Image: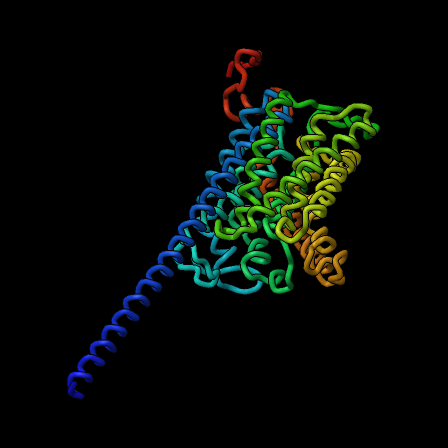
Length: 446
C-alpha cells in the first residue's frame, strides 16, 4: 500500500475523530446550558411561590387583628391591611426597593428607582422582577405589623401617611443595612429572613405609634390597672394565626430565593419546631399564671416562636430552634404584661410578638448559630454584632417612628374623636358596618 493511501486514511481517521469530539463537546455544553436554565427556572418558580405564600400572610394579619379587636372596628382593620399592601407596593416599586438594594453606600442605596436597573450588584441568577415581588411582600409585612398596635382609635388618613413613609424609607434603610450590603452586613450580622429587618422594624414603629396615640378609652383605671377589652372573634384570630404559620413556610425557606438549594427543607423544619414550641410554652405558662390555658396568649406564643426563629432559621439546629421558639413563647407573655403596666395599649400584642421577640431571636443567633455561636465555640464576636444590630435598628425604627407619628398628629391628626372611637371606626371612618345584622347604628341628622 502506498504511503499516499495510508496518509489519506490517517487523515480521515483524524478528521472523523475531531468531528466526533466537537459533536460530543457540543452535546455536553448543550446539556450543561439546559441544566443551568432549568435551575434558574426552578429557582424563579420557588421564589414566586414563596412570595405568594407571604402575600397570603396579609390575610392572616387581617384576621388576627380583626379577631383580637371589637366588632365595630373590623372593617377599619381590613382597610388598613389592604392599603398597607396596595400603597406599599407602589412606593416600594418607586423608591423603596432602590433605597434597599440599589448601589450606594453603607447607609442607603441610590440607584434603580422605579425598577429601572439590572441590579447587577446583587449577583442574582433569577430575574430581578421575581426578587422584587418577593421583597415587596416583605415590606408590606413590616408595615402591617403596626396596624394591630394602633387599632380602634387611629385616624385612617394619618395611618395611610405612616404606611407610605415606613414602606418608602424607614424599612428599606434597615433592609439596606442588613440585606443590601450596608454597614451591618459588613459586620457579619445574621438575620436570614428578617427577625429584625421585618419584624422588629414593624414592632418598634408600632411601639412609637401606640405611645403617641395613647390607650383606648376604658383600657386603664386611675390606679394603673388594666381592663380587658375582649376581641370579638377568637375563631377569626386563630384562623389568622394558622394562615400566618402557613405563610411562614414561604417567609423563611423562601428567603433562599433558590428552589435548588436543598436547605429549604431543614429551614422549614426549624421554622415549624420553633412555632410549635412557642405555642406549647405560652400555653403552659399562661395556664400556671392565670389558672387557665389562655387562648390568645397561646396564639401569640406560636407567632412569637415564628418571629424568634426567623433570624437564625438557616443557622441553627433543630434542638436550638425548639429552645429559641420556647423562650419566645414565654417572653411574649411577660412582655405583654410589662407594656400593660406602662399603660401602653397594644390590642393585639404586636410590639411584644414582633418587636421584643424579633430582637430576642436576632440576639439568640449569637448563642445558637452552629457556626460562630457562643454555645458552639464561636466566641462572642457574632453575639456582639447581633446586639449592635438590634440596638441600632431599635433607635432607627422607634426614633423615626416617634417623630413621624408626632408630625402626623400635628398636621393631619392621628387619633379620632372620643365620640368616633365609642361609635366604632367602621362607621365613623368608612360609613359602614362589618356586621350590620347584629349592630345598632347611632346616626345623627346633619
